[in-house]
Amino acid sequence: MFGYPADLDEIKDLCKENDIYLVEDCAQSIGATYHGKKVGTIGDISIFSFYATKMMTTIQGGMVCTNKSDWIQIIKDLRYHDQCRSFEDTDPRLKYSYMMSDIGAAIGLIQLKKLDEFIKRRRAIAFFYREKLDDKMILSPLESKEKKHVYSRYVIRTPYNPIALIAKMREHNVICERMHVPPLHRRTLIRQFNSKGRFPKTEEILDSAISLPMYPTLRDEEVEYVENALSKVIKSEKTTRFHEINTRK
Image (cartoon, rainbow, N blue to C red; front, side, top):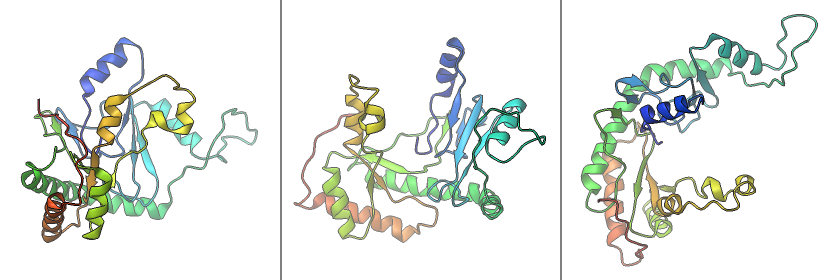
C-alpha cells in the first residue's frame, strides 16, 4: 500500500494452507523489495498500474506478470477481442480490447529506465517529511530491514480535522487529499453484499489520514514550503482538534 510491501511470507503461507492463488497488487509499489526480492515476483501472478499518478507511467494501462506460460497465453488471448487462431472461432471465452498503444509502451520504456531515479527522489522527500513532521503528525511506517518503501504516496495520520486541514493547506496553494474515502465496505456496489460487516479500525484510519504532495519533480524548496505551510496551519486557531489517535504504543 502506497509503496510499502505487505507481509508477503505470512500471506503466502495462508494461501498455501488454503489452496489459494496469490495475486500481488503492485499498482503502487513497483520497485519496492521484500527480503531482497522485487514485489511482483513472489506471488503466482502480479498486476501493475501505469496510470499518470503511479510510480511510472504509460499514461494509461498496466502490466500483468507471471512465470506460468499457460496463464500468459490466456492473458494474451483475453486482451484482444478479435484474435482468433483459425477461420472458425471455437473459443467460448469473452474477450476484451485491453491492448496498450505503441506510443504508451514507448513512454513506459523510457520511464522504466528512470524508475530507480524516481524512487531515490521519492525516498529523499519522504525522509525530509519524517524528520520535520515527527512531532506534529503520526507518520507512515518506518521501513524494516526486510522491506524497502518506494513512497508512491506519503500518507500521514493527523490528530486534527483532516477536512479543515486540507482546506487550510489549499489557502497556501498546497494540494493534499484524503485517501480512499469512502472505504470499500461503505460503497454502494459492495454494501449490498456486506449488510452486517463493521470495520471500525478502517474507518478510524481513513478519518484521520491525508496524503501530502509526493512526486519526483518536487524541488527541495517546494518540499520545505509544504512543511512550513503545514506547520502554520497546525498553529492556526481556525484548525479544530479532531481526535487524538494513539498508535505509538
